[in-house]
Image 1 (cartoon, one colour):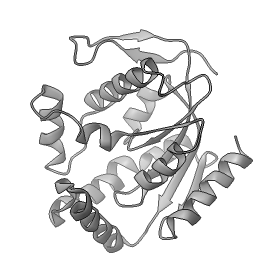
Image 2 (image 1 turned 30 degrees about the vertical axis):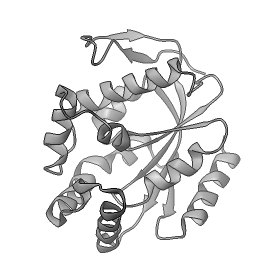
Image 3 (image 1 turned 180 degrees about the vertical axis):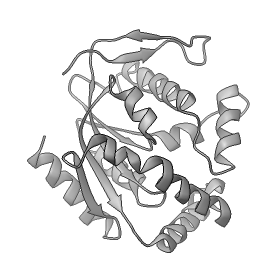
Length: 216
């Protein structure tokens, strides 16, 4: 793997700086609007040996809202806004560091599967020194009403109250179009694989795996 990645010192333990570590993580990004099925596909890949799935949304939702980082997440997500880049990336880096330390993620042999991060061009630029992005799987769903319906069903099933409010949902979709979608341009068309997210999850998973096998 390439060298030159960065790491964060002690998020949640008083640290705020960066220091060098020795590798980039071989990474596949699952990308798409809220409700496109990123989490589902990430979990499928994460169940396969030598793939480690990290969903940024799950990381944030598991935060203790009594902590400063947890309060910051709650404040922004309740308004349908993206969490600031510095908070997002530092938290993600700390979680990945913990997973490496617990030997759940073995970066020398595992591929990293990300969904929910990077969420904008600025995050992508920060993470350039951290991750070696092999492929970006863009789950497409032009029918926004279908996405809204999916999100509402998920809110009921998983008690995800941030997905239950129609106004918040529409704001999240607008935020995705304006702030997140430019990430696709950052990585370039050569790395982006567009997949119809309205297909059955198993069909989507098959297309993702076929692409990974063809372009490891």
